Amino acid sequence: MTNRTPVQRALGSGHDARSTADDVLKDIDLTGRTAMVTGGYSGLGLEATHALARAGAHVIVPARRPETAAAALRGTPGTEVAALDLADLDSVRAFADGILAGGRAVDVLINNAGIMACPETRVGPGWEAHFAVNHLGHYALVNRLAPALTPGRARVVSVASSGHFLSDVRWDDPHFRRSPYDPWLAYAQSKTANALFARHLDALAGGRGPRAFAVHPGSILTPLQRHIPREEQIAQGWMDADGRPADGFKSPAQGAATAVWAATSPLLEEHGGAYCQDCDVAGPATTDDMLIGGVKPWAVDPAAAARLWQLSAELTGVDAFS
Image 1 (cartoon, rainbow, N blue to C red):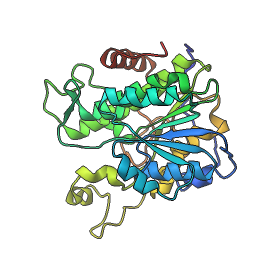
Image 2: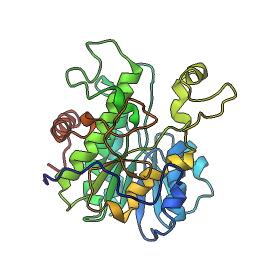
Image 3: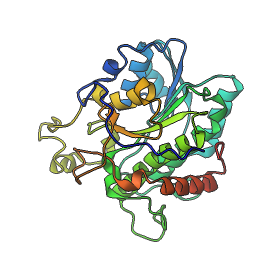
Image 4: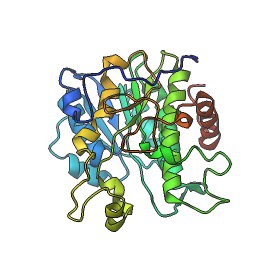
């Protein structure tokens, strides 16, 4: 385990909030590489899948709805779909076992699938669904796939969010068993967990295993908002009455860019564990304005990251890196 703590300061990548996934891959050849994008058949995930495939990668798309994924990716060369339900640890195990049994190496893993502001839902042994799907399912997936992650080259990217501004991990009640359920706090906690997971995975790997990063993709209107009534989205200022995104919102192709950049940019080789946005390393948050972004201290705290890792290992029964 390395004690190196990434510095949250922009590197000057040459890209910005307007860059698309194709822009950041313009000079990168992924021929012969294998990438994996969870939920890579909708919204930002679909844009990332398309861009990685166009850059030459073979892209595996684990999907809770394989038939829907296959239809979305029909006509996209270099992609394949496999069944995976992140809310079901048996499904995670079966998917990973299939990859390992085939002797396949994974060079890029983008943990993109997720849910937002859902009605209260319990999965597995009564786990709150945001924490289970957005964090624990991906935690288990990465640990199960550890032998397949190309040593010294693989990158694991967790799609977090400036939604983490709203909540640290609720250490005393992460599953809302003793307090009233709040869909936004549930989502926010899971996004903080995504950032902490990347930080500790990179620390544990110590440069020998995968480099890991968390990214804030920006504000984008995608199917992720399916549980949020249109009236609420208008009231929040996300769109106007005609459904047009507000100023400062990105297109899906722009929203996918930071995850793809984190997965491939040579600039990040010595900055594992960093939290990124707008195709660069993010600075500390200096405001509570989530459109401006940055990263709050609780989402990059190494002690909290280690604590979350231990909790996740206890809950899922898997830990391939400690």
